[in-house]
Length: 304
Length: 151
Image (tube, rainbow over all chains, first blue to last red; front, side, top):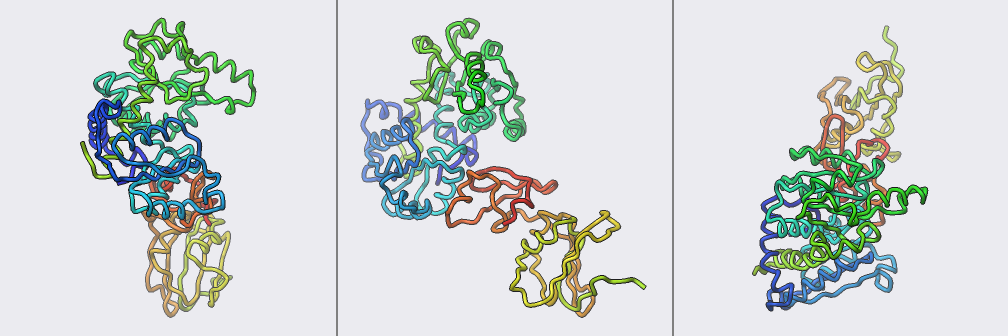
């Protein structure tokens, strides 16, 4: 089985992954030992830089007794000599038991799954899908709020181009969360995604005011607004200021508001916020390990 | 007497009621190229009772595979096919949009892996038949701009 797009998974399948991930937490923390994937090799092909995703996959594999081989930049590999992705995949397919791929082109993971006999896990393909991020986000919400359904999730940032928010909002709709999209009008959620979300029976709210949206939110999911999207730097400064989460912005927030961020953050969350009970983004980053352990164990045929 | 600008054909395939301006793309879709060894007539901008104007394509001595012909529906949903045998219409049918499309279109997303130098042909799932909308099975991008992306 491949993990290419969150759309390939039913709610029941995702719930199963989250359940397995929960059991993996003590192993991920190093409190328990496991040799579930002993003797298994993960081919790790990162055509683009990544810190969290790559390291958490390596941690996940290592904690389960498996090993990782691969590269974290295509320079110096046969890719730099012009090898096609299809050929690289067919080669690594012979060397490993599963393949994790991060690639700048959309659809790269689907192509890899087409050429590989072994399971392929998509670690982000360009502006396309990043399903393991979505699963760790769902895991984090479920863990902190005991369920996903009925929670009011405000998603903030570049909703037009952000790959994380597209798959996350679709998955949250599948679980029956209430959604508010917070962004400047030019960076709001594309119509195509809104249609998909509405087809799942969810009517998302659209807002350009973070201050308003934050009052009702149970979860605030913050993403980066990229400077390069704005032709005028002054315009960027103005927008970035309006969407910055700081102590002042949080004064009307619910007591148990959870703030998440896929990281890296730049200026969108003030470091002051880190010390509050709201800040859960580092816990979220840790959750990448048990969730990826669960996925690896499921695709490689081991289960706890 | 009715005047024919192009005479009836004895044997072959006539694709009628093609959306005006689409005839050459229809030929590309059904795989009729310069290496064909019979006469191909292309009529463009012909008066039509139904649609005002239409294109017609006549391919002599070749009966095209109905599956190939269904792809014509992607750019001309109202096209009709006439299989001609000995000057008579032996079979007549309208094209139907297929459920999957491979090899005749490129993905409209420049960032899609199928637009790089990989050994795959772009492949699409038909997510809506009217208007035609195709979703790339690799990058998930939907497109309604079919004729501009014909390979």
